Length: 275
Ligand code: FPP
Image (cartoon, rainbow, N blue to C red; front, side, top):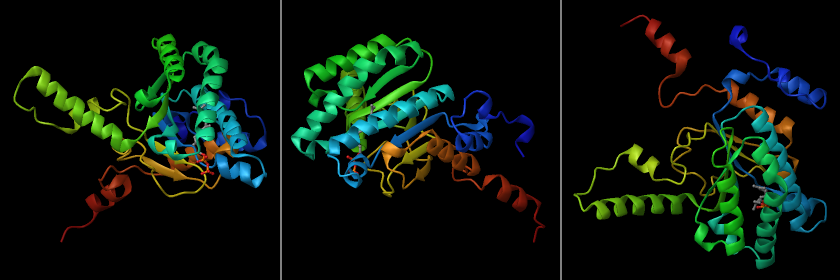
């Protein structure tokens, strides 16, 4: 159906093996999501299955993230959001939290030049106030360095919670009203979107969650209203390029209806005999 206009992905990405080649052959580059959001889950289980400490799972998780960031940039996906640390994650043992923060700083130190060379813009969403000063400084430096880059937006959700984001948006709206000293403005959907951390970004078309849990875990609650949800049993450290291609192929098979009837049913009901 899309054959005449489809652009095959294997022409721009060098497949590393036959599996990737076969999956890439099924992908249409013209119908990729504008925004992919990922709940990267399963680092701990990955480590446990190998009788390794949980932190080894997080290290491998960073490797997986690196691969997915690179592949999304090669596919010219406009926006990729990764859920790196939630407001609930502070409940983990102190040593694990410290390790995750250290990993993030290491990642930035090592990868920032490559991110910048690849014209990627780093954006951090969440509540920065609770992050330590060195982490905040590194993040601010990375955002400043890449702010004029026009390629993929890499959005890292850090100390992020969907409800906290809505609370912050409503407070920002109230503050505007207070500051302008005017009668309360009428709030509409656009006004709320404009005051979220993600203002200006497209809503995710595809939400991927690894390691099988059927939960949203307080992630982008407003923004994923119409997103296609793809849950895979694969643990995050095993989420390779091939697994991403599978998610994209599944996404391209779905018909997005936004509450309407969709192409097939709309045509069949329009042509159905009356009475
Ligand atoms: C979930 O595994 C993962 C996290 C808590 C997020 C950490 C993410 C990374 C280290 C990837 C790196 C990201 C960037 C941006 C470089 P889990 O510990 O909840 O796994 P479990 O449910 O199996 O215990």
